[in-house]
Length: 403
Image 1: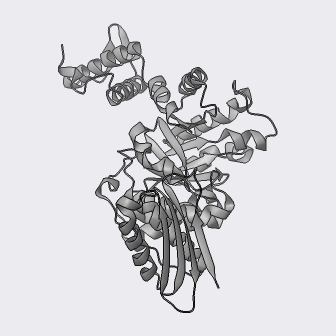
Image 2 (image 1 turned 45 degrees about the vertical axis):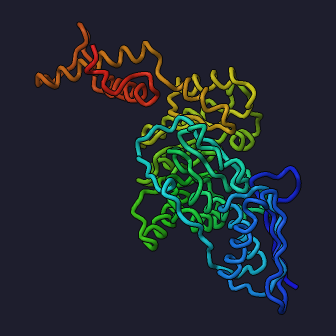
Image 3 (image 1 turned 90 degrees about the vertical axis):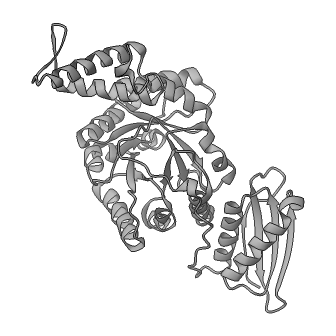
């Protein structure tokens, strides 16, 4: 008999489940459930499984579930993945309800200081990610997912987008390369994803192919909300073509770099000092600025070294980066603190902004601070610093009215 199974089992598993579906010729549904939350949610779990099987037209099967506290979005994802493995031709998607807290929008210019990577096939990490308040949460379908689990991961990520409250963090998904990535888009674009991260970009075509597929899905499903792009430079060729990649689509809002793959591509080892990647990182910063998108730095891989992380963020800021990746929630606070403008920066920016405001009110064509003339780029940078200070809580929104 045909059989499909999906998920994880065993004592070390949490917020997940394992399900097996074996087709029978007759006899209806034989359902066996073992759950750590049987006394509270056993009936609800059985109902969910029964309704899911009915949705897929499965009427005769032996079904076994081992539940280790999976939330409904995860339970439904594991059920659908098992059905798809049982019947590879299955095209229907069993969509859980879209919760209202998952429907907020994003904006092109928002801060992207921190983006937290989460393995797309591990629901336990997604459930509480929002409480750490990263600027963005990346549900990863690429490097953190084993090739044999790509199919299950895209269903899990889709359901997380529909039911996990990320508490205002930007909702991001890193897709796979090539045709697999285009299939990923079918599972995430209709469900209020804000940004698609495009891995290992080496050409304009890499960006345009993804962008075209995103727009095709948006048009087909009548999606009004924006879906932005963040290409990732991860090779020598990608670094050489950084500007073309950054400027390839009007929907690109940021350009970032992945140094593990980059250093492997150029045949060297990644170091804490980063001398081997200075040129590539500078390329990304300049390409992003020239294309008028945000430059975002790579991850800092040592989750225990907070001092090293702080130094890395300060260096990234000095190079011109607006943000940095992180692989553990404990890195978020350090990143936000290090990217926040210093008190002296804020005070100078306030003086420049007030001088600009005074010049505008008097119809003057030039801005001066004391005896010095202030150029437009300096005013622009000061306005950006003030916005950052407000966003990070270092300056009140009504600071102009305060004496």
